Length: 403
Image (cartoon, rainbow, N blue to C red; front, top):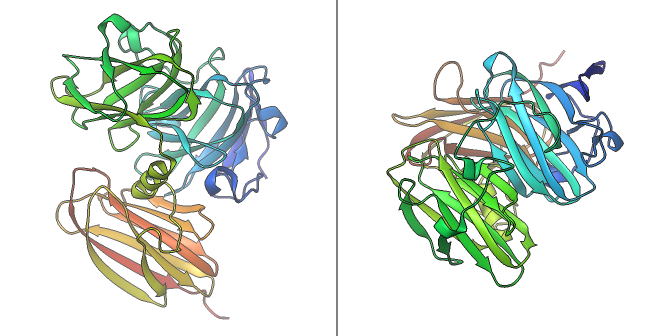
């Protein structure tokens, strides 16, 4: 049993991410919230709109695992979600709504390898997952609050026109975008775009070129900050506004971490929930259905040991196998030459039960997961979307010793 303890102007609990959680809801956040912990200690205290200050937990994330915190929003507005590892840990966060759709993702926007997302949220329940960038064990803090509450992380200073939560947008200097028509410019040539919506519309924005490592920021017609994203898909950025935006002229600010001279393709298009779902499957961020509508390699019953060789790129390749007796499953991805594989494992309810990037000081990945009877899915992909290489997969099952 872990005891709760007070933080300055906050409610904080110590949580062990690998243990069963207080909030048991198999369908919350697309299954990601099934083992979540309320950031404020309970649901009532985790409403960011009414909490006197931020809510926070300190969590120990075990090897190849993640921590999931839960919070609610009763009033629409701008909110800040952050994670910071102790001792220089490199955190990654994903924020999902109750339906499991991503509303924000971030790696290093908090500065010093910490994560920070500032985004506009509609009333509802949300899940924030924190993991280590390289899959190693991590002790860190997860904090959520309104924009006016104290920040956990330092953040980073970027151009005044795209500073998260503030700044101005100069529409006179912005290049107009048309829905569905990509434009490509270097950051040096163009860093601001505008989008005219003649009627309410749900939209998606992307900025693509991993050499540039772009950052997207969206402002409303009054110049107020709405959303920001960095590193949604590899080093590319994406903002999905699933709820229709009112008609008006919006400003899209661009910043970057990488090369300012390379072309960055910026696209505004109508929000497509099916595309968003397929992107989740391709990144291994959610498990696909097993009804044949998405390609999954069926391995049948995993009895002892199975080996598979495959050519893998940035899009995940999926496997499914059946377990009829509880025990231990080992899944290993070994690069055959160039490559840096990433493994993610889910149970048949869509709950993530394992994640690993680098194992034992190598770029290979290894999952060791205790399993019960059921169906499990494993995704393997290259960490770098531009890499294509052969990966050797090994699946092994171990059963408990008999007395």
